[in-house]
Length: 400
Image (cartoon, rainbow, N blue to C red; front, side, top):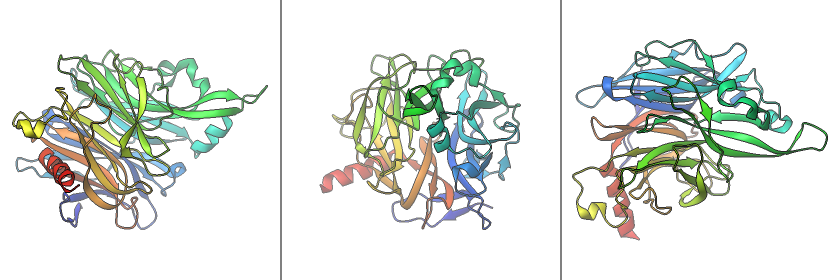
């Protein structure tokens, strides 16, 4: 049974969809997609025996039906029985919807047994597979699993100590290309005369399909250290497409980059000074959307560069710890310093998240790890409007 968390002042109401169980079962790594044609939300997560990565088991999902009054009615938790390989654990759900055929792809990774990520990085022995399942009925049923590793990564796999996708949602670009955000722990050098890695760094990249998901390829990795990422398409004044990437990175700030070739490669990565990272970093979510036509010139103001899309980014706002989940607005997505100050939507422990934009209601929805003592207590769903985000940003700026 769903339940709502108490609403703090100026925070949206949050509905708990996945909750840590008394026996230790923990739900982590949220992913969210909104299917406009059927007014349906699909909320995904990992079900784990404990909070540890190596105790992940299966992917789970809940379907949410958007009602006329704006409320969402949620189905019970469903385990995705086909989204797995024998003797592997399923992780990092990353849904992307292909509009032409109305087919939903759920891309994820399968890791052999309880093999830790750190062991793969230390030994260079990759035990991870790139997989997907599909649904043509909005998540009611799912296809058998498909292992994409050989066709997408190919011989490059020998240089990948391990890898992941997302986590979070993928995107279909206006040219039809499906893009799944991903990252690799890339082996730069090995110990002389051995296969043991000496230098391994993480880099964000894309996995993409140009034929509606029939075949998949990987793009070139960013030129700067980066990790878990999400991507969003930005349309400029002239109608040109730019694929924006926002990636996790240690060192205090997020990494940003832009692709001019739909994610095949990315140009000049840089650190986003307005977007802080906790000490060890944290996953974040980004979504693009059209600016409301009702905005006045003062609301659009000089910070807008005239692009046909804006960006919203979601991430813990504390500089040291995973605390105080915030939403940042960027009215000039091609400007490296275009981010407003964040609106806090959950005060307290906060972790991974995923954003979705609902064109039907001009509202944004999110899934987020959150709690009162730990961010691992719940995965909660919440919705809010753009005006709420903009008003918060203006109020904060006027106070400074």
